[in-house]
Structure formats: C-alpha cells, structure tokens
Image (cartoon, rainbow, N blue to C red; front, side, top):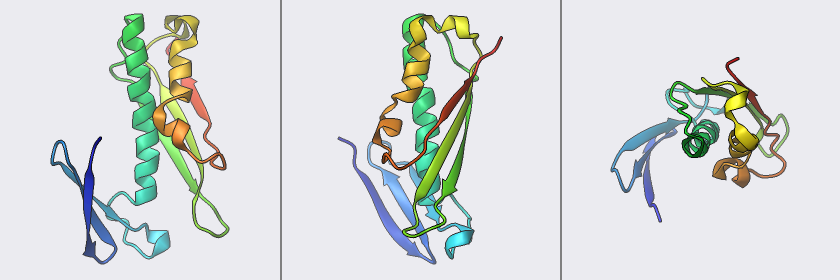
Amino acid sequence: MVKITGKYEGDLHCQATHGPSNRTLETDAPVDNQGRGEAFSPTDLMATALGTCILTTMAIAARRLGVDLKGARFEVTKEMSTDLPRRIARLATQVWLPVPRSADRDGLLERAAHTCPVHQSLHPSIDGPVVIHWTE
C-alpha cells in the first residue's frame, strides 16, 4: 500500500506528496481549462503514468531476457474529448527501444508494453494504441 497526500494551494494549483519517499510534485489546471499550464495537469500525469509504466514493465521483462533497455524512450500524445463530460479520449503511445526486434524472444517485451498496470487500468472508452520502434 502506498499513500499519496495532497493539498490545494489556490489558483488551481495542487501539491501532492509521495508517502514512502516524501517527494512532492505540483499540478496546475491546463490553459484550455482555466489554468496557466505551469505544471503537469492531472490528466497529463495520467499520460505520464502510462508512458513510464510501459517502459518500467518492459524493462522488468527485458531483465528476464538479459537485455538492457537503458536509453529507451517514450512519447504519449494525450487527446481530450470534445464533448462533455471532459475526459481523456485517447492516449497514443510510441516507444523507441535501443534493441532490435530479434531481442524480443517470444514477444515478451511487446506483451509487457500492452499489459502494464496503468494500461490495464484505463477505461475501455480510452483509445490507447502502443507503437514500438525497434533499432534495426
């Protein structure tokens, strides 16, 4: 169990604290929703969680293959709905790996990308394609 605490600091800014490490992060409402966009928005954090979860889960799987994914990177493009209620409609993810496809024996890395805990937790109405770019 992990506890995250938070407080509203005013002017649409919040601060959250990660219990185990005591590290903090700040959020702001996005410019298109009355904020100044001075920090990650809550929905930006969801996109960030997806990208980092995919890379972390792939790195765990890569260890089993004896493969190092250091230098791998991701890009998540978040699209909000145009109708109400306001929500995330699409989280399109691209992952660039520093290894060739041949390193992914039995498709373990590719499965890991599509089954990370955050991806599995997304509402079914969120379109969440994942594209992997291999080094050839």
